[in-house]
Length: 146
Picture 1 (tube, rainbow, N blue to C red):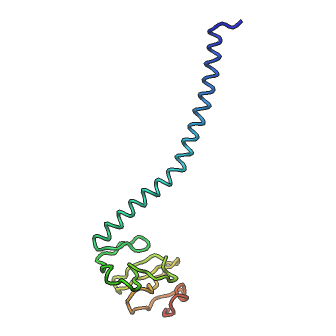
Picture 2: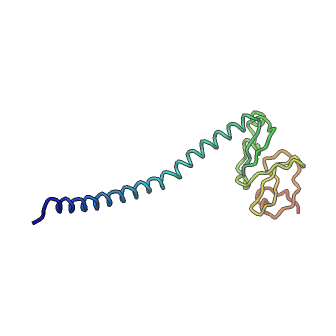
Picture 3: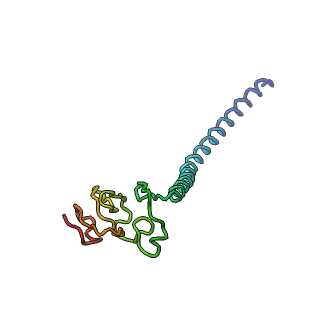
């Protein structure tokens, strides 16, 4: 016949097993929730930080170009309202998603193709369109020269 101490020992072992299993499941669920929530949280925080940086840059008279380059002393957005502008209002052209690069030496906005070649931005007001071309912008413009 079992005495009380044996019965309590068996109950303790069963309880430990159940608590251990429950804790393992709880830990796995918590980790799964963190794995799901962390990227969403990072995206939300990253978006908020990016929005704040964009606002700070805009207020300082600068612009963040496609690709992350910051261009200072940019014209006011009201000056180009109602027309395509390579900084404020890009049109829907072939190169619109390509990284932008300001060529201060030529006063020209370029779009860099996947090969790293600079092509004049179709929305740039500069008449200078001569560039060493690899043909990436040919469907978009037609004013390239090698």
